[in-house]
Image (tube, rainbow, N blue to C red; front, side, top):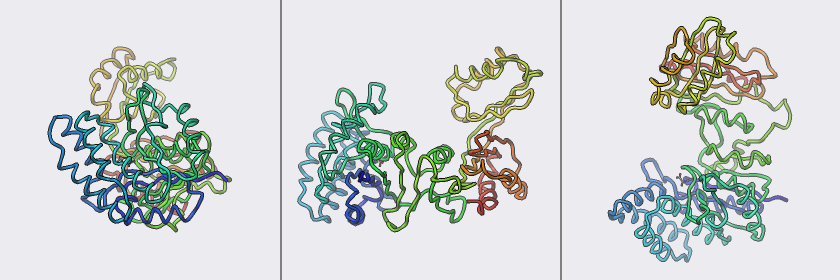
Length: 440
Ligand code: ASP
């Protein structure tokens, strides 16, 4: 049977007690053969992640300043782990080599990667598994993007020879061999790469929540856990602010259809959320899978009589934004109006130039910009099969006396997006959640 790849996040490995829980999970299923680990994360609120301590070391080392203070905190974290696990691991030797390297060449990515490296060394020793070095097996191209072709085949071959292995998350190597990290939270991506390389039957992502929630728990009390979701739905929800997995972790497994299971290290009996390419059958498709949203959008509204008959108007308008490197998020239109919804921060940097170019090139009758917009997406693969979903969203907002400033729904009906005033954002999410709860 194909193996399972299990990735454990920083809070699952924050101290020896957590590492023991992780070991019990791994030993409970002999198919959990390839283990990807993060650096030790926060043990409690206010604690500092080892990766953040490493970035502090880099900040100081780069300026030629002493970095003993954060370095000794790192030493403290790891020596407590090694001591409490009761293993015979040469931590001092490892730390000495790392300290010398930091002093000689304070390379940011190399420094940041040492949390994952040391944690994986310690955990492989504790479990009695082999250690596999990502810098020898996960490759970036010159452009800084993952070189999938080179990585998947080589890593697959390397792991094939090993029954059980631990692989540090978060980094690989550039073509010249220099260590390169993914962006923050990137061990999720490593897990996905390893799953793809060994053709895993499942990629388990163990964290400290029992799966993806159907709404932000800071806004809605006790939102339901999503049991199953498609990659596409997840992408929509994560884009709109729901977070449980690094965005780039989906792509390596999505193309080959390996499911991802988000699980809770502290509640291992809970089934968590399963992410798949498609649901087993349409009856499984929920009308509404989740609700997510974000603040910080602006609408640029352009009006011109007979716009609908002017071939190329839309293309010209989008071209202006493209030339200034500003992406648009949505494009609701009327007969003689076209509006682009853009990220306020990205737009602000070139706002004056963009408006000037629209006046010059498109010769509109008016342009207006409205800031302070929040976008909310109601996402569900099953929406396409049901009637009356939109009405429930609008009724929920109307009952809560919230003004809808924009509506967007594509014919694939994967989501309904509404724009509201930022001041109404939280109330709107709560109102929609209440209105849609029975469909989730
Ligand atoms: N340790 C890295 C971070 O804190 C990567 C990870 O945990 O996924 O971002």
